[in-house]
Length: 200
Image 1 (cartoon, one colour):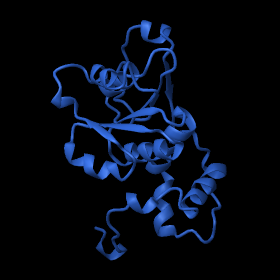
Image 2 (cartoon, helix red, strand yellow):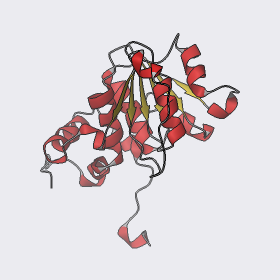
Image 3 (spheres, one colour):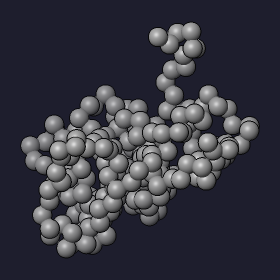
Image 4 (cartoon, helix red, strand yellow):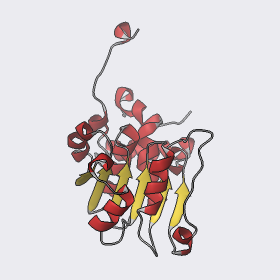
């Protein structure tokens, strides 16, 4: 149980208890994109949109959304995405497409799909020397992460996170404050409000 600002509307801040905090924290707490940097977000579901929002709050100048579903692209603009890549539109690996778009690779990537191929792509698309990739999605139990060791020797960093490196009891009250100060727009994440009587 986390004690939060009593003024916070519970029907809004309840959504901070999982996906939004996870994506937001993956960007702000783990990837830590410098101001003006380029971030790729793999998967534009709720967690990926929150990762884009975190990159926006951190001051990233380019946020590239990567998703197989182009119908998600328009919505993702509201969360800070500036460009989009659909891997199906290219006949080469998406990490190569991103490297060409960004003069050698993105500064940070956040993977929010749980697909092992996307995880490898997210790692291989970051820039040599300083690129950081953060894995958020939960892979299949038999999945194996395979990449060439040179990707590590070239000074790329691979990180993982659970719940965006937030400690619920001590950190969630601060995420609620971000919302109360209008720095985090939780309303953007809410598409429907349903009364209990209409829930099956």
